[in-house]
Image 1 (spheres, rainbow, N blue to C red):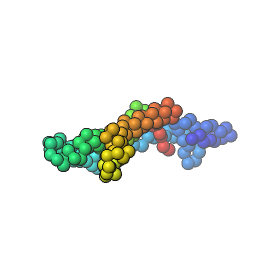
Image 2 (cartoon, helix red, strand yellow):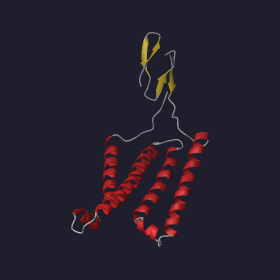
Image 3 (cartoon, helix red, strand yellow):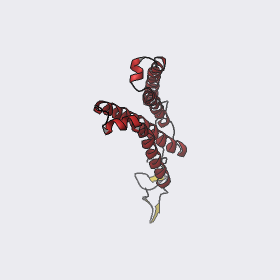
Image 4 (cartoon, one colour):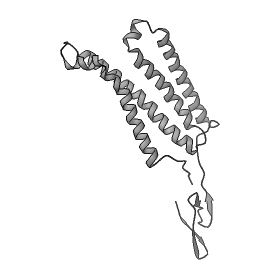
Length: 183
């Protein structure tokens, strides 16, 4: 944001890292505002994140402990483990958004959350497609049965994650995130 400062007759433009005061006679340094752990909202967010992380970890531990029971086996163990692990990482990603940002954390937090969230959503999609295909399979010669037996739903998670990584790579090359200052 460049605005003019009037010094008697001469108009001087403020640098990009500064803005004009209300009288338009001085340039003032822009500040970076961020959510800190010292702020009450930062504390609440960090506590909530850690609570959800522990709760999801307990559920994952319960799944692992009872992995040989029929209900856990019927719930498609591998996808459940992937989903719960990616949810843990999704919750932990919010901790990256607390604290004073710099260029590295701006890039890291955006891409990390994007990829981990994509894994979580694609896992839910995979589990849903698997259940829908299982209920649609009524006769052995149907195409749906071939899709289910071939393991086609298993390729959804890597495929969607690869698409997300590609989009993040294009984004980082063309217009990466940066620390923004506010007047």
